[in-house]
Image 1 (cartoon, rainbow, N blue to C red):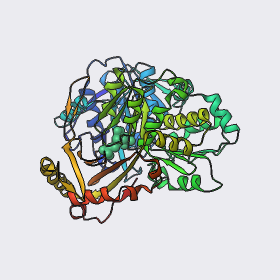
Image 2: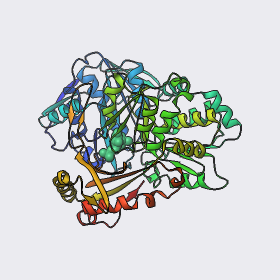
Image 3: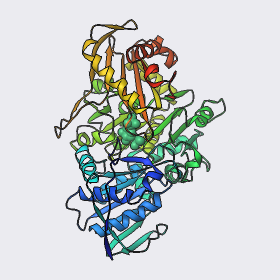
Image 4: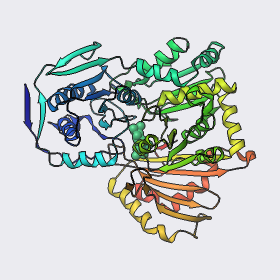
Length: 542
Ligand code: G16
């Protein structure tokens, strides 16, 4: 019943910031998915008889790859696979299931916020036994294996029925189809003050969540409508669709604009939130106030003790390097550790496992804590609702009082998508060559205090990750950062991150792009973005 199938390596299976992401037709090439899955198994040791978790965000090609992965797990010797009903598991829910049931690891099928459909994106990533994304040591081993792989193992059996909860036999391995929502919803109920949020909502506070036709729909309906009593219809676009209804499931001001406009309208809801394809990203909007992801991390950390799961305080905070330093000021005030890591949730795992940090966040709409080892969209939304309920203030009041106390970190990210890869690399190379000569000089009238290419020395496993983004720091705590995205699937995406610290509360009401205008001009002057990208302006500004 077990076949060993000959195959040839593909040269392009290097995992990016979060697993392997490619267009669906790439994954549909002969043995493409099988090669990568076998390379994952070949890079692991000691899983014989152990449990594997498998789930995905429901995007196009999800079910097909789940069937392949199930049959390959059986052929490779796993004892059991837990798979979400319908092939569904949000990324944070998969992380929780791995941890709760002491699984060996998990395979999560998602291309996150990237669009889905027959010609759109698909992805495969491996999570380790702590529930978090595989660290670089493992992803490097997987890539090395993909380059030489010559066969894979698969059980020759019929497909499993993914739509019925229960236990099934697959070539001697147990497949347990689980309800994807219950364990996760139960966990949320242990962390947050559900009675307080319920009475906030029953008192007339209107909450809407846009699930963007992606994986969080069933989770949000269960939690917000069923357990917290919000009226039916409070969760919009709640049915996960293979093509996300032709939308881009990316919760930001561009792709969740309808929700944003609704919350900002005079008679609109009091609070709006959105989540991405696989449920790990979040966007939070209060009436009259969009909360930037960097600010959200700082404010969740500052108010953490409002939530029962964090009532004893937090051990420390971590953020990715391009994320604003707003959280650093909170850590300083609380007298707790602050860690700056490269972009990618995988870098937080060691710090959380070692008990050094409790909450983590990234500018890319990701926030989370050590309750799982992934960022968690609904967790962040519930945390905000808990804070609003506990403080009895609006989101706008909470944000403005935070700025008044700590100062405001004006922050924006400019993306240049679909740039020719050679041109993008040339821009980075030219910038790198200048770095040593920049300190002490002025760019657009701003004095440079330091410039480097960020390198991270992991304090726990002592691994070193170099070339993680170019930083140019200016007098007064402002900075610009340049990096190439590791999650795109066509061409290169240049990201420019711009930040200015403003301690003076009388200057906290300036429009963000205006507050950052001189830094944005400095970025153009030093990097010649227009010339290298051939674009006059960014494709996305968040
Ligand atoms: C992934 C990673 C995040 C990272 C983000 C942006 O998010 O999990 O940790 O911040 O990519 O990466 P980049 O700037 O390289 O595109 P997701 O939500 O896509 O899994």
